[in-house]
Length: 212
Ligand SMILES: C[S@@+](CC[C@H](N)C(=O)[O-])C[C@H]1O[C@@H](n2cnc3c(N)ncnc32)[C@H](O)[C@@H]1O
Image (cartoon, rainbow, N blue to C red; front, side, top):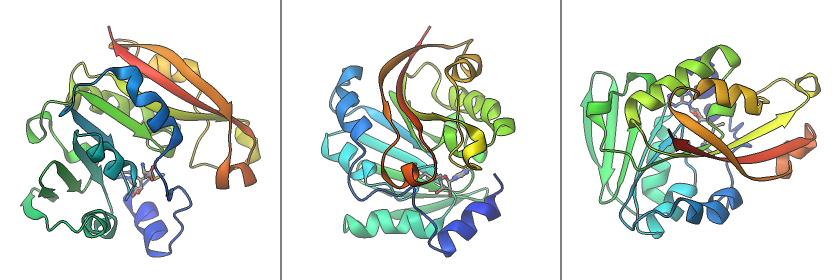
């Protein structure tokens, strides 16, 4: 999706993907990764997700990247944090304590820009992208994070029921995207619920991607 698509969604308040409480797939399955306190978690396409706050409360360092500046600012405001802001080649870094958010394009971030990543948390990120962008997205995450595991939440549904995003992304597609670097295990599967269930019926899947 082009940046303008997402900026319009934010400007018009069409952000049904935003959840009021920490995501159940995250809170249930983060323990499956046995992370040490103080691990570095990278959240691509993070929006203003309250999952960022929850991960900080677990004692981790949290970094994310998001196109929309208002969303980035909203995260710091709700935590009553005043970030320090740096700008470099069109990407702005907002940082306070254990939270760092880049406002700009994920694809503009380089591995040297970000700390060593211990876990990628991907919710409404891979599935937010159309098929022609998903392989590039996965390759870019691997470039950024070397051999970090991923906690990935995805959906499967009959794509004729609605236009994405979110898109239906099959197991075989995820395997193909990460075939050179990660093996895939399904941690759980349940029916799609929440606002998305009013638009389609299908499955919500939680995956553990383990470096090979
Ligand atoms: C479906 S939303 C999910 C947000 C968040 N993960 C959540 O669970 O609430 C996808 C977000 O990714 C952002 N986005 C899309 N493409 C991006 C890119 N290339 N770089 C940075 N942010 C991007 C959009 O602005 C949008 O906020």
